[in-house]
Length: 296
Image (cartoon, rainbow, N blue to C red; front, side, top):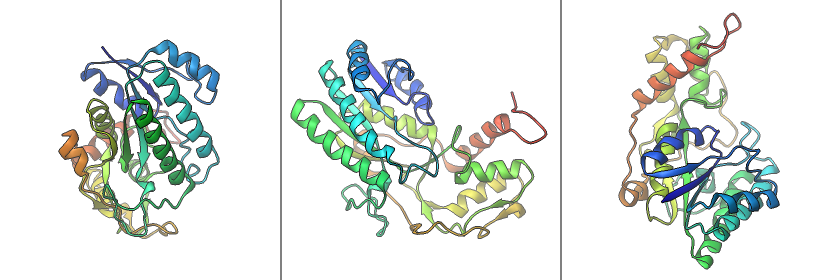
């Protein structure tokens, strides 16, 4: 029996991972905060001992939009995550996958291929990278199979509303102009359902070490925003260049996602038009406007 403990199961990525894990034959343990408080080490040890999971998919972290890059909570979560891993191993756990980030790479070069230099410029990136190093060493010493899924740029249902895709959709659905930066930044975008499925595939594999979880095909932010505007029939209301680019915003962050494709054997199910259409449909049903409550 494959029994997976998933943390962050109610979050943006975690809620999408439950069904892919079940399809792969996992019995899924998705505790709520009251059942597993990861910031309480004693409670974590007791809860994890009772779960008796064979696999661990650790997605929980401090993710307050716009705040997480420099938040001191990042350091707290390094310790909490290591304690979780140790408790999981003590309870007989055999394989663990944790969520990393493309922010571990040296963004000054734009090279985000596996094996590229790791020079994180933010506290978030440094803490994620420190967790990876410590967790990987600990697992090697204690015989736990360990993989690290580096997340790139995702979008889709439940995305924070201030992020690119969500903000453009929300503005255009409300009949407002969608104001963005110049949009020349090249990024690797992946629908969140695909991201969650990639995590499930990685967990169900025997691949160890760091793996980029990405589409492998970068596009410009202008292309992404333009696809939203095209599908909503409002290209004239997309205002590229109306906002300044973020300070230090790298021109390109790209990867071929080689290990994910060749070793894990995974490819995305959504192309950009289909992914944008799915996201627009979700926001149509959930967007709240000043004159109208949420759609059913």
